[in-house]
Image (cartoon, rainbow, N blue to C red):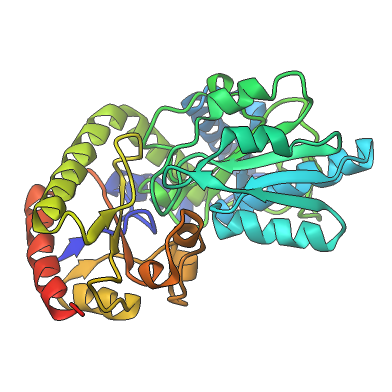
Length: 384
């Protein structure tokens, strides 16, 4: 049996998405910046896609910027807001957490090299931000706070609505990495109270190489890519029409199937967790609770009982037809202990024995049962 439980890394493109993209890879080839009919037709399609993206999060189309991927979608507002705010007010203190995705943490490291003051706070409950520590960390020169919405390794959900309410009247901008939440749970940027938000197309059965950023009207934002007037002079470069149209189609599908998909994956994760507890409720540790996303299951093999080796674990699963990971796809190839798993309090030994399974609504209970058979054999093979 072939089982794909690495959907947090990427998803298979939806047939309807691929179908929607085909015309823009063939006959609809115009440059959207051209004023003739070939270009105008593409421009109309892109603006319709922008409306689709805006509607999905209760934003205005003018607040949506198309970018190349989730990494750029996070870099753009981080650098754009931080630099503009520093130039306008002199504030240079930025707060984030220790369990963010690397495409948040590494830009922050670059800003720190340029003289910005970066403060990373601790997490609680499998990766949620400690809101009390967050408020204590605020200084007079704090300009920006960046917090992941749903953690990409544990599924922990930050209560952004509550956090934004705590920031009212403080003139501090709030950015969120929503790559793992968009298309899987309802997002209303006005309810959340965020000033910017990032998403990536290939996490919701869209094409790779496309994403979008929401930036609330009035938020200071300088461009990071220069050389063109595209995206209202804030993101230079010819747009990728096929990918943008594909993303819009993926958004439409995800919004229609949002609740039904959530219920399906909830059932899958619930069954998986129950089976793991029946197998060994002391040495197979689930890094989540009922308040975490059902799309992600982080499992730690206790180093007290098992010879933990992430590479061997993943290879054993793969040989048996199961695709999983030990963390974010952009870092899992290194097979180093996950900074997220270390950040939630695990030892290096336990982090080396932590596997992420991530689901899609097409996964089945039968796939979970087969995976449990493999895990059962694996626990016998790697016992101390």
